[in-house]
Image (cartoon, rainbow, N blue to C red):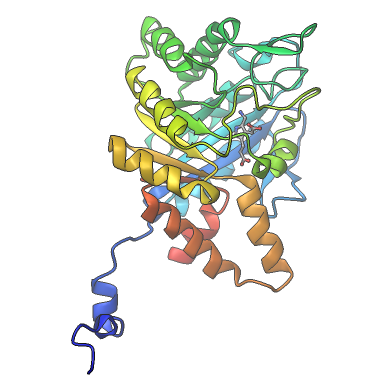
Length: 324
Ligand code: PBG
């Protein structure tokens, strides 16, 4: 008795390539950049090999390098020179992200799609993603919303092509959509960090973006890693509030969530391959324990297979080089 159905028949030669279901392309990639107005030369991040904080004046050069590799989009994070309890340096016309957007758009125009992360945590003295009641150590939802709207508008007016709120405040998409529409920015889409988990995989980012917090943690607003029905509700709400793209973050430990959300809503869906996911592979590769290019490719391909249309990843340039 021999098997008549043999899956191995299609596993070798050209036909193996022809039946491939998923492919990775440079068009899928969004390259995260950290722009710091306190420095005048790049500052390497020890836990994120190859990623540096850049002075504002160098943002356009780095974005240009990404464009030359074929990467279509960047997402910007800012490190301001001053922080206060409300995060006031998030929304000024001449604050760090607004300046970086202008530099990049002046240099590259339509050749680079510029997304901005909209959150207060890099700009607040306490490091939380919203306004804080210090006495009770509570992160206040509703007073935060107008500040997010204001920040998003300032990014759009500086030339951002898309805004990406990451603070997990309830109602943030409505607040931002409203603010954008009232400021003649109704064509600027919103990519919502819809299902953002309270994850230990953000560790290296907090060094990169200088966004550690002075008390507590982010679990009163970011999601419990144990939940996925809740992620579907988060995504649904953000879609109803007008989000154009929804994101799942982190990516690799949450591929089931990504798959559910893509399958359920069929929306343009992004996944954030976060700093800890990047650092793990880099560290193992440095120790000679994993083949870096192969695990990078396999990881990003898996994120795509699970349902991501686009991937925010610190590997963007590495993968673009590999695909060339
Ligand atoms: C903050 C923000 C975080 C990341 C993106 N935006 C960190 C956090 O919530 O603490 C993490 C990205 C990464 O780890 O690569 N609003």
